[in-house]
Image (cartoon, rainbow, N blue to C red):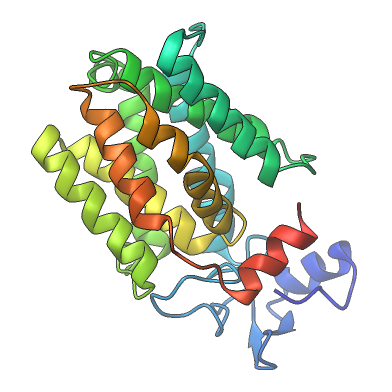
Length: 257
């Protein structure tokens, strides 16, 4: 979204009065305290949030409550475990870490720490076949996932509809594979949350696509048989290997590297 023409305190004051008029990237005027960003309405992947995270009640709810619930669920599952692997699993962890470092260098918002935790959980889920069932045994994690899922639907009634063919294909593949692996409502909600975050957030969308493209050669060569998580990861990596980033996504990586 375009930068605000006035400082934050003045904008917040006007916001309370319902008078903060903003220009979208396409030049359309709208009241960001009451209206969605006209450039982000619809089910395509967005280059700016649907609702202002600073001024709109739904935007603030999503930023302050929903995202907090997602991070809490990740922290609760990540816990105090030592994510130290050997052999092929260590190889997978290393290549994930390298890909994250490659695409996230400016880390003032601790995005890299978040991505490292997700990488750890992914490898741990493949390494320990009973790990996924711990989502259900951890009531806090499950409650956080449910809150985030319902909160996203409150934020955007069409949150889990994707006109971007890349995200539509990812969603279809993951849901099909998870249902064949373990038809589990919580896991399906996690998939919805992850794909929606890629739809809503231009920072994470191109980076996850690049990370999956980066790790594909290693995933294809892993000497791990009869491991459903690795099998699904391999299918996802091969699905995205030829997916191209948009001009705006490439610019985002260059500007916020």
